[in-house]
Length: 320
Image 1 (cartoon, one colour):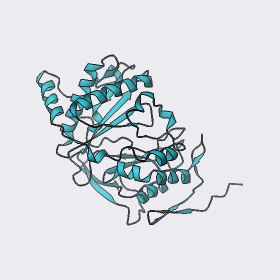
Image 2: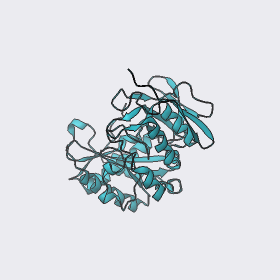
Image 3: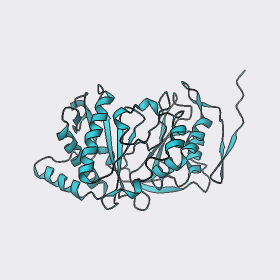
Image 4: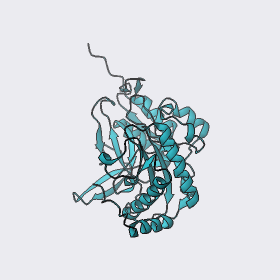
């Protein structure tokens, strides 16, 4: 006899009622985390995840049957959204199509997305006030196939040195996988092309300082697999990465966890999971809470980009 489904659960979230159907559906078979556990996690880190997503077009990574089932990359808002779930329209020139993507402004919208089987939230680095002008520069430290995490941490340390010299404040976090991200708030004055040029100029400076561990080599097949790719392409248009506090579709439900810089030299990504993050958040609060107050002017990096280009180091073509 088939097991009877648990009745739907209603959660009160910031004055909204969000219905969670199939609350006992197991999304993470290893630790046994359910759909309801996922919803309650996002409530526990609510202010932090909203801070990471606020006003941004957001692609959803949905797992209707749990993480061992099919993964759905969803740009358009799923059908059936209540009228308080907001969207932002973005245009995709390659296909000459538009999509109304989720635009988070409150925790209940995140929990509603969980009801629609969303595990991961991947926002743009621009906001709906002008989706073509990023206000977030993203430094993605992406390890090669044979790179250990100690190498990633060393490269992060050099990235911090360069940021400090520029007068920029970086906000680090784990990726929820094997790498690290560092976010820097910028003025929304430049298009994606120039933000990517600035990111590449920064990446090349990191590579110059620690060439034994870091690379900006464009093609994966040409990269040394023991090095960390300082991935400037995450600043290209419509390239998204998991936001701060996003759970990842990994066997242990790891989380993209904000860190202090003092934690980076000893951090281990596996320590930050759906199970451990609520207590950490209750103790420390949102470690990225001050990001909007630390705005950096890209002008010095654009000067570096012009210098590199004048010396023959042209930027690779924009990724698809």
